[in-house]
Image 1 (spheres, rainbow, N blue to C red):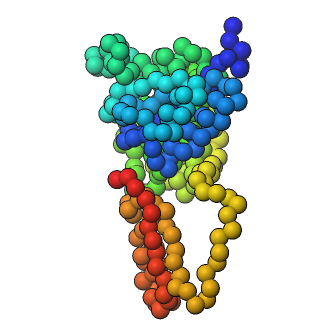
Image 2 (image 1 turned 30 degrees about the vertical axis):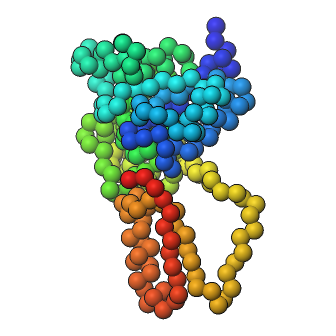
Image 3 (image 1 turned 30 degrees about the horizontal axis):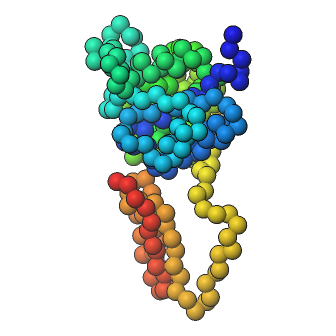
Length: 255
């Protein structure tokens, strides 16, 4: 018989583009803390090749890893209708298909599954699969808004199965409201999370003198759709700011 301490906590990262990014820090740090406390942890990620230093440390600390095949965008909820490539993925030692990864996770009888969606719908297949298998799960939903609309298939899966989650967590109230609009439902058990700041919290940062030009740091890759550089530019275009000596430095990497 499995005791609660023996049953793993599983983290599924649905990110189809890579291992890193702001949407991945929270679950990765949480998984590491659980491993360090002696908890059994399993991680399921898409196979993007060489692991990042964060995931290497997590693996070396004792977390088990399951790798999924790349660029599988959806899973048919009826296994009898699965494409043959989806059925045999992973049979010969390669990465698992989405269906196989969920079957493997279900066989471990997890105490909890944490689904980390970097956008509002890239985990629709996962949410549906966990719900259909009766597994306890929560969701972390990061990017969203009017620029990201789920397609009809994804919207149906999320509308049907998000209500079965123990909790659905968002990075902002706006993203929650937008997803409810896009799915035409009220999402139950909604909550909010905060990103872990990757800076020292006890640094005494000197405030500039009144004679110095104002320099502002904006952290985020050059992606106005997600990061809002257009809002900063619109603000700086106002007369009150055009008349001030201010510089905005942008820091980021990625796409």
